[in-house]
Image (cartoon, rainbow, N blue to C red; front, side):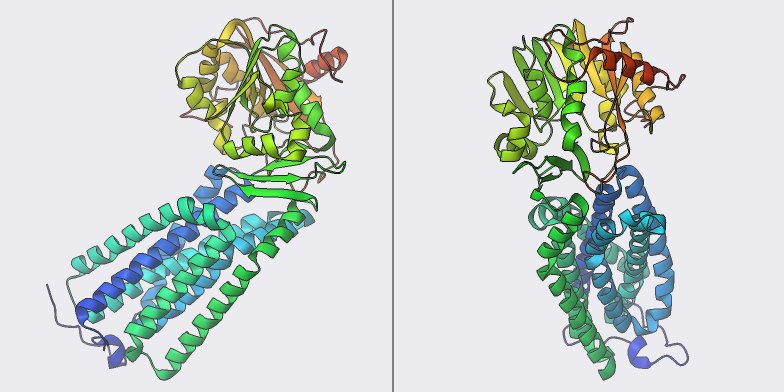
Amino acid sequence: MIEPHAPAPPGAPPDRTGPARLPVRPGTGRFLVLVCVFVCAACGLVYELELVAFASYLIGDSVTQASVVLSVMVFAMGVGSLGAKRLRWHAAAGFGAVESALALIGGCSAMALYAVFAWTAGWGGMWADGPRCLLVAFSLAIGLLIGAEVPLLMELIQRIRRQDAGGAVADLFAADYVGALVGGLAFPFLLLPLLGQLTGALLTGTVNVVAGGALVLGLFRRDLTRRARWTLLLTGLVVLGVLATAAALADDFERAARHAVYGGDVRVAVQTGVQEVVLAGGTHGRPLDLFLDGHLRAGGRDAHRYHEALVAPALAGPHARVLILGGGDGLATREVLRHRGVRRVDVVALDPGLVRLARRDPGLTAANGHAFADRRVHVVAADALARLRGPRGPRYDVVIADLPDPGITASTKLYSQEFYGLVHRALTADGRLVVHAGPVTTRPRAFWTVAATLRTAGFAVSPFRVLGHGSGPTAGPDRAAAASRAPQDWGFLLAAPGRTPPPLRLGADRPGTLTQAELTTDGEAARRTRIAGLPASTLVHPRY
């Protein structure tokens, strides 16, 4: 229903509260405003997803980081909507200023977060939480600006043609939600794989400022004073200049930041469809460091020690058929193939991009001994849980869970009672399962929760730990392979179906440096840390 325009409040400029003086017909003007709503909503959701993705990568624990970003942004959007009420009498100029600020802050947020993570998190003190503080600050700022958009756009669309509030809200929100859908799909399927997080965010900011500037300076220019038009134009050009300069320097910036995080020997840095894979060293006598999404998965002098401890005790009994869950780098496979009597090794790795590197990269193939070229090895790119739920095949003598720590949210399902129930089904009656359950010393509760979960799934467990030198797999993003010289440990659980814990022993023909005396001592040390009474972790109630 069309209504007469409400009278202007005392002192308000008539040209900023009355009907807009458009250069086009009202119907075309409404359409252009709704197109701008669509574009701005898409950009806003990209900023939101970019913050969640970067926070999960840099800080870890994706559920917590997503909750922080989303809750802070939604709160800030409410505050921004209230604050926009003061700009209603200057809606066109206010919207132009909001879009310029949003494009600058949102577009540069990824680069700023990465810079703080790369160059300040190692300083200690107050700077140790720099990425977290900046994440909250960006979530708050972007939320405030996104929240201010809708009231201002509502005011602008009502100036074109007055209609009932319900109809105007429906039109505006329809364009907003459809734009959010497009932005939500564009981020993982287009921007992230093709442009990466840095350039993708900068491009989004560019689209944002162009769309906002075109609407205000093109459609509502007659509602602006000459000074306001020039101010918004120059501001938009400055923002575009900053974003363009940042995009031109993005590759150099990313290389410098990556070297600050991973060290100066970075050879390969690729974003696969699953994760970011970084290889440092591995040639000319330098040790290989493998990082997956910022987590050190194999590094330095401890790489062989970790994988030997993971594999050797499990292969002390029958081991003709071996299943490796994870292990896309081939390092656990290399260790398995060193044992006599292995007839078949099935590797279920989630990331085919990592498997390709394990087959072709000279540093990684040298480290894994060209394990994937062995005719006994069969590699399948699949999710471990989905693979185990599939049709049953011949059972395995040994299952090796070479997976990320349970402290990483994405891997929690692979440490659940349901998962271990499927593993139980895949094992022979006298088969064995070995699980890397994280550090015993620093995270004993998580370690013994894994043990409790295994027992609930029908396994008896024998815990043990192996000391490293601070350069092995960890539960969170690392600064570099040699960031810490303090001794650390890796906790393992050797499990077997039934009620009798499997003995911790090594095969007589096993090659390697781990001794039986060390293994016995390591088992006793792990048992002394036991925490009793912990509940099992399930898919619907994870406890890590």
